[in-house]
Length: 190
Image 1 (cartoon, rainbow, N blue to C red):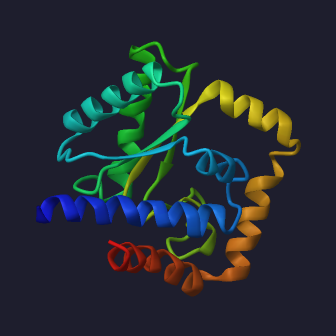
Image 2 (image 1 turned 60 degrees about the vertical axis):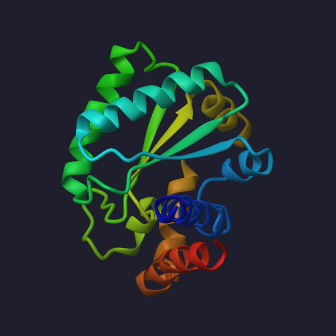
Image 3 (image 1 turned 180 degrees about the vertical axis):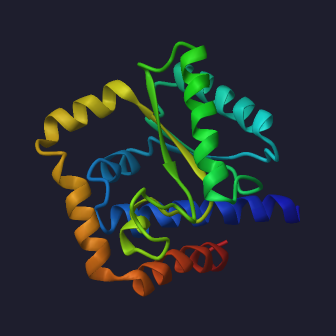
């Protein structure tokens, strides 16, 4: 029973992060629509090694193939890949799985991590918060839906530029506080 409640708190903290950070700050202009349609799936895995996580990723890809009503999945893996360097290396294995399953033109994996750091930045740079999340996450996106959204949006190249400017304007302390509130809000509302 306690384990189920803890799982719910983890999932709720990620939901709050999506709603209060990604959507509220408009970091992804496509997210709000899919949340409103209840087409975002949050899945937590108990994986503790790369083999188990690849198995969970494979199962989720198979689920998405069969479930067209779900647009995207956030695969949360709180028990492993806490080191960003190790997480970043794992992304190659995840991409390899997409290719092995012949799904590399069907799905795309976006990466989010509590210690996310873009190349050429310092660990404390505010712009890293565009991809910082409460837990390590593999975000599975449908390639065709993404292409349609991009075509409808227009100048998508401006999205990351705007996001970096916003992160720098808000600053590390405020962004860190917003991220921390996702944990507190999830516990209070549980």
